Amino acid sequence: MRVCVYGLWHLGTVTAACLASRGISTVGLAETPAAAAELNAGKAPLFEPGLDALLAQDLQDGTLRFTNDVAAAVSSADLLWVNFDTPVDDNDVADVGYVLDRVRGTFPHLKDGAVVLISSQVPVGSTALLEHDFAAVAAGRLVSFAYSPENLRLGDAVRVFTGPERIVIGVRGDSARKVIEPVLKPFCQTLLWTRVESAEMVKHALNSYLATCVTFTNEIASICEGVSADMSEVEAALRLDPRIGKKAYVRAGSAFGGGTLARDVQFLKSIAKERDVRVPVLAAVLESNDHHKGWVVRHLRRQLGALAGKRVGVLGLAYKAGTDAIRRSVAIEVIEELMAEGVDVTVFDPKVAALPEPFNSAVTIASSADGVFDSSEAVVLATEWPQFRGLDFATLVPSMKRAMLIDQNAFVSKQLANLSGLDYIVAGKMR
View 1 (spheres, rainbow, N blue to C red):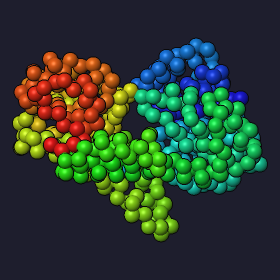
View 2: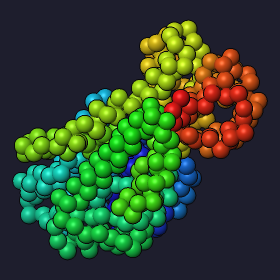
View 3: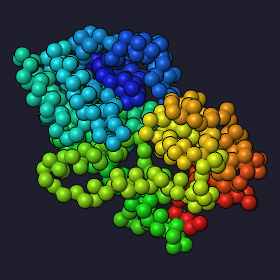
């Protein structure tokens, strides 16, 4: 079995490394010689715990290599696994054409009997469109198309890929299943086989459901803040209801960022509009989430008044713990708001040591958490790095000009339980 993984940012690099670690002959198709060279040197395009070490081991074992030669990578592949992280603009609209055009570029090189498995985030109907386009140039070749929604998480991707609870695969018939099944079985025994369009819809439905849960919970938490209710107590009661459940998304906290959830909400809104279907709940999700992104700055204004000239520290820059990616990070959006208010911002992140313009010239990057607290009138805990729970708050807080910590998700609440004199602000509790 030979697998070609096409699209080598987060999703594709993790996929290629994990496949090769199980002894599957894998080639990663990069878009440029420079990208292929970096990967062949064992360097992933972004930080992901354990990924560089896994790449190095696979390369040493000879089960993995990278190239930017489309013909060489695709022509011998039994399975072409498309794993582009679909680009999203600042309005959460995905550039689907970017992905589809690159798949079309492989059509001349696909061998008879190959399977094309799409895991990139594309709207339902995209796989059928590719099938139609390939049929026009097939020249007698039989190639099957399938779809499997990715379910990776930044910062925990290797573990999630190698031990998923289930994998959904949409196929047309047995020919695709016979190629895909032996590749996926080593990672998961629960393979759910569906029609292609159902598998595409799973990703939209799952992310949109989670997005709705997040925004609904944060709206309830905001009401709690105004009526002396405690959202953590409301959450506990909700989880005990069997219709909701212990693992439900009902914890108050920050707005969702990153573009992943929002992209699928936008997909469904667009599909519904094309088919003249009303979706008022989905239509309100992004509006609610965008409003909630201003929660931190609203509370800073409430506590400090006019923010111009105030010194505020921010702990964390990354989109989430376990990565160095900052694009669409909620922390970055908070900093943008603070800059617009004329705030003197100091930041620290364990993995992000530099920022692009205009942040680089307007924000002070501290070498440690100490610099974030020193002389600040407030500190915002923005990214939930585990090491932040180990900070010596008893020493850091007294170094502040005003002892105020905004921790929207109550991430360090246990560490602060016995610390007096601190104005500690979390989501869902009245101030």
